[in-house]
Structure formats: C-alpha cells, structure tokens
Image (cartoon, rainbow, N blue to C red):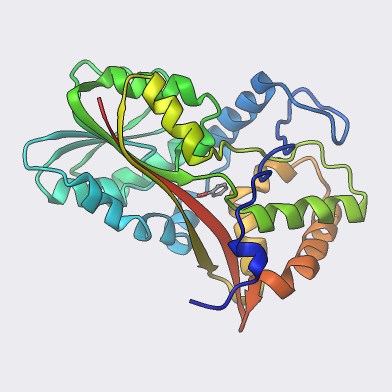
Length: 296
Ligand code: BEZ
C-alpha cells in the first residue's frame, strides 16, 4: 500500500455534509435539495446510466475487495440468501458456490442484465430494497457497496428486517462517515474555483458507526459488530484513472454541464488532488467502509 497523505488518514466528521445532488427541480448552485429531489435523481440514474460492462471490466475491485465479507456471512448449504444490490452478480455467485440458494436484486436494469449474462444459472431480479416483494423469508441478507445509494436508510433496513426469518443475519458493507472525503472535497473546491454552475452535486448516505448501530437497533436488529476502516483503493486507467472513476460514478450529476465545463472542473480537480491521491502513475480513491453484522 502506498504512503498516503495524512489527510486521507484523519476521520472527517463533516464529509458528505452539504453535498447535494438532483436534477429535479433545477436549483441555483449551493441551494439545498429536498430529499424527494435527491431520491428522484438516484432512481433516474439507476435506470439510465450504469455502464455495466465497463463496471465489470474496470471496477472489479468493488466486489473483489469485499470477498472476505462473504466469509463473514458464512453462507451454509441450503440457506436462502438475498444479495441486496448485487450489481453484476460476482458476490452472489460466490455465495451460491457455498451451496446457498441465492437471489440477487438490483435497481439497475443494466446491472441485472449483465449479472444474468455472467451467471445464467443464478436468479437475479430487477428490484430495489425498499419495496422488494419476497413471498418467502430469507436466512440472510447480504449487501455490498449499495446502502450508500439508498437515501432512505430506515426504510431499507426496515424492509430487510421484514424479509428475514427470526434469527436471520444482515451482513453488509458500504461507505461510512468520511468515505471519499478527500476526493469529494477536491471536486467541491474545483467547482468553486472554476465558477462552473453545477446544480446537481451528489450526496450519498455515509453514516458513522454509532449512527448506524442506533438505526439497526431501532429497526429491531441486534448488532453483533460494526466497524469503520479505511480502504485506499487504486483506480485503473493510469493518468486518466480519476476522470474514468468520475465518469462511472459521478457522471450523472454532471450531465447538465457542457463538455467544456466538465473538462474544466475535472482538470481543476486533478490539479488539486494530484499531490494527495496520485502516486507513481496511479490515482487512488480514499474509500472508507462501514462493515456490520446484525441479527434479526
Ligand atoms: C462507494 O463507497 O462504493 C462509492 C460511493 C459513492 C460513489 C461511488 C462509490
């Protein structure tokens, strides 16, 4: 692992705060967006923008870095396991390899299509975690890199509680407080520096461990463990790695900008972040994960 800037190491309590996304309604730069507008943006983004082939090819780290989460879940032969936000299906397949009966759900049609192509014998369904219809209950719910996209955390946890059998496990990982703090701060500063009006900056749900423990507890789960840890992640693409990452994960929120304005913001962002997140020809993203194990 490279030596990273101290900025990457420090807990950033304010990360994520004050960042907003949404296309509807169109608002002035800096103005707050309603939850409703932000939800609409994420729903629309899921329906339209994921490039699942590229995601599979260039962002394999999203599932590869969470393989040990499957170990934590410890799926048993014959168990029914729901993979919430299965993406292109790789972790669902690892769970199925252990003999569990799996169903992977994702809100993105492109991801589900790719998952079915990757693993034609497994079951995948286009559905979101809020109103997923499950006639039979599960022994476990597994989820990786998904919960930060769902801006109604209470609702999704409530639904997962409903679909689990008593004693069922809810095991997952997603972006915790301070996730991508340096990267997003660089983006924010670049927008301010260039003066480009960018009305739809993203915001995700990146809670602290304490906040998430309380949430799980209030929804009826017993929390067995919850931890926050840094996972500095190299991005593929060499010099273009940061731009490519932005194109995959933040593109939607930039779509009202002209190509020229996008280029100006990205160049300013690269210039600011190069001393911190670029080493020996590789860009890094300052991911920070919240991993939890809870029981219904
Ligand atoms: C993540 O933590 O996996 C993530 C969060 C926001 C955008 C892209 C990725």
